[in-house]
Length: 248
Ligand code: NDP
Ligand code: 8X3
Image 1 (spheres, rainbow, N blue to C red):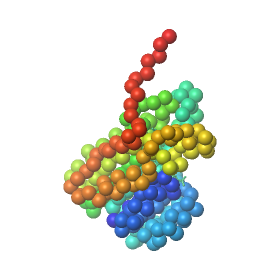
Image 2 (cartoon, rainbow, N blue to C red; image 1 turned 90 degrees about the horizontal axis):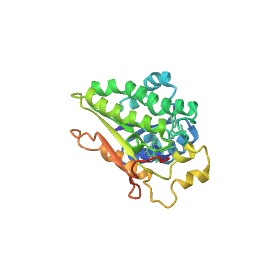
Image 3 (cartoon, helix red, strand yellow; image 1 turned 30 degrees about the horizontal axis):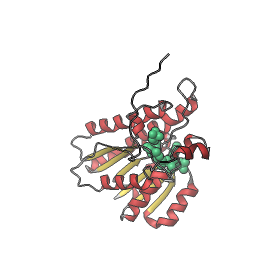
Image 4 (cartoon, rainbow, N blue to C red; image 1 turned 45 degrees about the horizontal axis):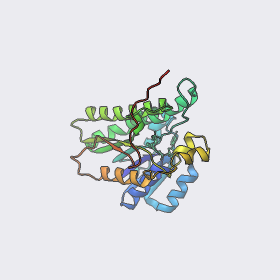
């Protein structure tokens, strides 16, 4: 299979790239940081094609894909993984720039990439789109505001893809992980504040990027008549805290 992974320079994307290459597949690894991708390519060899792409530059996506080397054109699996959370401030204080960046990456980049790859999959009557959602798309929490909303969009878009792709043989899956450590997610969210980022995982045994990669690999290698619509994963240490009531 040829697997295109966005956000392959760290975290889930990097672990998924490794899992698919070690499983005997070829991976187009996309992200903005060329040095990180080059290190991954040095580790994994010619089965990995490292290419820089900023998914928010949506107008570049169709020409970027058209310019892939001919032997890399037939994308079997698209994994829309690039994404981020910025900040935990309440909506009335949050930065509009942060909100715009999350929407541009988690949603606009994802839908443009999907729209560019789908026609080839439909023509070949085969393909799989895996979108990286989050438990934040299903459960609200203070400071989750636009990040959570962007991930709810990802899940609903994925299910709507299923509706549109009926009869085409093309599959679509939303993966919605909960607390997952060992990635750059919290460093990005807390703007490089290592102390705050580390605190998120203190005293927990979170999911790992390898757990997510194994899940994506399992979904992508299932028999072609099976579609996992959405899969929600949490570490055992994570659960639900109920509804908040403000009392005067
Ligand atoms: P990381 O920050 O480790 O990885 C994010 C990846 O996205 C990086 O490779 C980054 O690469 C890439 N990326 C960010 N912005 C862009 C952009 N504009 N264009 C291209 N690539 C971009 O985080 P995770 O691996 O933890 O997160 C991966 C996905 O999983 C995200 O969508 C996140 O929301 C989601 N998720 C994470 C959870 C967690 O707890 N960690 C839980 C649930 C979901 P570069 O900077 O080089 O461009
Ligand atoms: C990341 C999980 O709980 O930090 O999507 O929002 S959470």
